[in-house]
Length: 119
Image 1: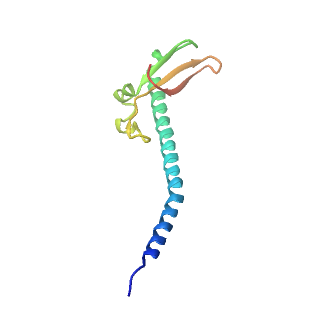
Image 2 (image 1 turned 90 degrees about the vertical axis):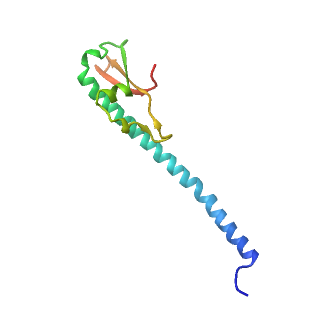
Image 3 (image 1 turned 135 degrees about the vertical axis):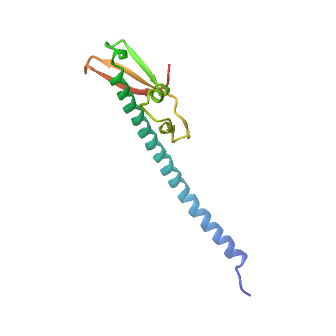
């Protein structure tokens, strides 16, 4: 009689289960890490766009340590500094809706740019 016995089938299922238990966390971790790296790249694109915005809007930038300006992603899109399809959060595939906080730092005599939530 040709074919597999029940014991052989159970053994194959157990081996496949063990392999999947070992590889799933590794693959899942790799996917999560790559999404985090892609998110950081996305934030870098947004910050670069905000720097371009600040070149064209110098008069709106803070001039002392107490001032700050929030530039929303919508402002960057509407101003043509960033494309609408470039602002998808790779972690959750949703549109990113934060802002770039621009502050003046007298210690370094320059503006700093930080991606944050709008407030």
